[in-house]
Image (cartoon, each protein chain N blue to C red):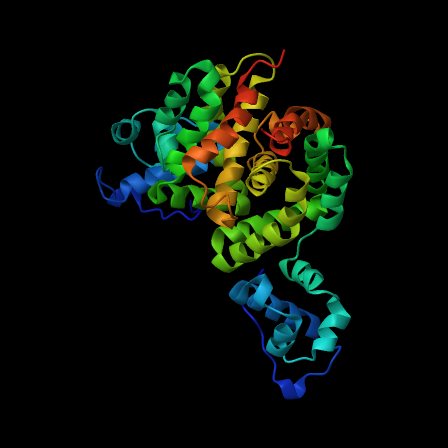
Length: 201
Length: 201
């Protein structure tokens, strides 16, 4: 997630050049960070990249898919949230732990995910992108699974717990958490997250 | 927490020079990261810094205090753990949330604490120091407050939840978590942490 951006002259650009995609992604990162997800559009991003909006659609599909590519989220957040939603209501805490850990346990997904956390700690623009990802992509799908009042706040508490587990397990590598089995963590943390899913009233 | 280290020639060094303290701290970071907390000693750190062990004692007192200064933990972890221990057994979850948030809510403590997290995400040596801090200073005092089996693992789960709350609230700044009141978070997260403090059997 670099802030630098190589511009090439429009005269020299042809659709399909190897760097066109990365220029669109650079423009998307700028626009999402500066304008926010709602105000940024395929059209505004295409204009900033100096390409036709149809080309952006061709490469990336929807605005959400372009956003996910721009943030470089190293897993499919839709299948993550779908897995949690597919569990019975009283098993979603455990399912959330299992699904998150299945992503984090894979170094191919973990390494760039940790890089995202690091960028967010160092750069306001990266934090802004991560905030929009968390709100638009994760929260909007997890909060509806939660019953009762304060669903968003409780969804965020659950997500934050998994972020903290990731930091303690894979970055600090504190024992015995670092080498505990996935099953043990599902049993330990799952019922905790379930507290956030259940209606407290 | 920089890895670079300026050495000066021993011939030119006098005790009490303004940079002697920072050289001792540099040597301490190196020794703690390379040897680990147990094997590093005031004597080995003094030798690495080219000063007398008595001078290290004079400046920093005990090995633990030298370690805390080297890791640059921006709060007093002993008073943090003492506050949690002072609460009744069934109120420690809430007290832990309140005590951690009282540290994080203060930008003077928060900014260097987030810098520590960022260092750990980027540098293995920083992660090693943070691991030793978490184990030696925090875990060794929180785990004895926890009843039943797996006390260490449950203490780490509780600590990781607070780290995740910090990341979501102060770095990603996701709403409504970012602007929720401390009291609301104590009520929401406290009973969750209490699950980790209570004997599950």
